[in-house]
Image (cartoon, rainbow, N blue to C red; front, side, top):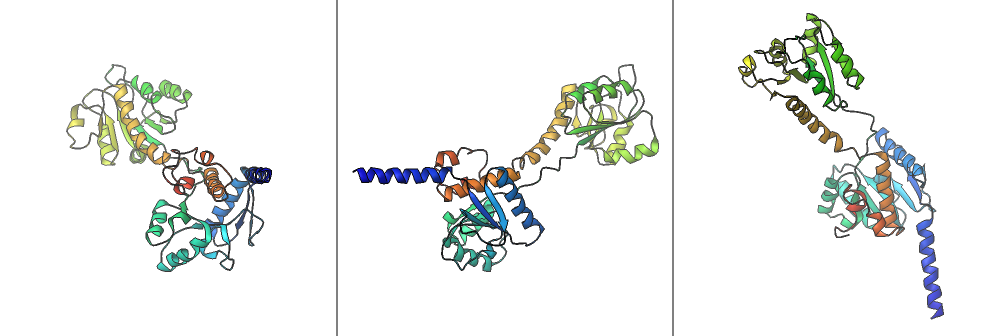
Length: 335
């Protein structure tokens, strides 16, 4: 009985030591071209930042917990035991590559696809599902969305028909990260200054310059007019340039068939029209917002810790709902 308890204690201690020890990862340098090199370099950099003992070398390290191959077909197949090897699976464009993976997958720890599509495709063609997962690629997060350009091309009038005061209220209601203004026409100086104080980007021409006008109108994403006075002549030029219009539904604005993109009357109407367009762009931006190199590395760590039994499942699955790749493409759905 005492011997059994001692053995159990030693086993438990070894498991605790394994879970608490620093993860050691060797990334095999394939020197295969700039994009694969970028993957391996970014992965190694982020692993080190996350506290993993990681490096890149052209040679395997048998003392490492994991030997990771950025390209699957360069993996060392002479060894018998590959259970702690992982490898990245890029595009599969021939049956030869499928057959290669069918032969290698059972001998290795995990093949890491770049997409669910490729993982499902390989499974369909006979690669063991339990030997596959996917981790979506990352991007550098240096490219930001181009701001929508809102164009306004009339001068101010103080007889109320132009409703000049609406400009600042509309501008303040918009996300300044998604919109900027180009204004041509006299009398907007004070309102432009107020907008700029609020951090709103404005390109302002305080007089009508015809040659410049002809250049800037086609650069608008939206033509803005909130006056109520039969219509604005700039509306015609905006339509001729294929620019969407956010204007009052009045006068000859109504007679250009299909020309009135967003009919608006109140400040809230105008804000809602612009934000509706911004929401479409936000969906695109947010679709890859979490695809960072740090998360790319974290997902690899989770897969490796799963293979090595280094962490409890409850710890590995704490991010469920935040993403579906990585560890969640390895484990059964019921976990």
